Each structure stands twice: as C-alpha cells, then as structure tokens.
Image: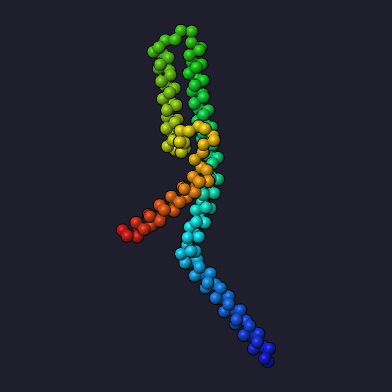
Length: 152
C-alpha cells in the first residue's frame, strides 16, 4: 500500500511541476521581455514575407516600364524614319498622342503598380531592410490606430 501512495504523490508532484512550468511560461509571454520578443519576431517574419511578396512584382514592374519606354522610343523613331517628308503639324500631333498615352501608363504604374520611376534592376525598394522598415511602420500604424480608437 505504501507504493500506491508514493505513486500518487509522484503524480501530484508531476502535475504541480507541469502547472508551475505553464505558469512560468505564461508569465514570460505576458511580461515586457516576452512582448518585445513577439513584436521583434513579428517584424522579422513580416520583413521576410513582404520581401518575398513584393520583390518579384517590383522587378516585373520595372521590366514592363522599360519595355513600354523602349516601345515608345522605337515608335517615335520609326514614325520619323519612315516619313519621306516630315510635316511638323502631323508629326507633333502623332508624337503628342503617343506621349500622352505613355504618360497615362506611367501614372497608372505609379498609382496602382507602386512603380517608383526607377528602371534599374540593381536598386530595389524591397530589400530586407526596406521590408523590415515597412513591417515596423505597419505595426506602429496599427498600434497608433488602436490607441486612437480606444480614446475616442
């Protein structure tokens, strides 16, 4: 019979040590150090996520705009070379129409596509540091909005 009581005491000790470990873990995650660790982890994971999502889109947008600019240049050159006699009014009218179309494409790429006007593939906005900065901005914006909404 003494063995049975020993087993119950040992089981109670295991249960209480498990509860103690859970309590310590909860206290850690609710402490300042735990919260800071969670925020830093969120920022780093967010940076990797934003970089992975936006990097290819940025490269694609730069390539598309380079092709669009080259097509415009080619069209203007072709329009100039293929004309035997260049009439200023006609050429200016045609060139203006093509330039206005190009301008609309640029504005659309900047507003909707997020293009920054840079066509160089070696200078990208969505590097890890840029994505980390964006992740931090998102957190501070959400935090500020939450605080602002709770007071109003």
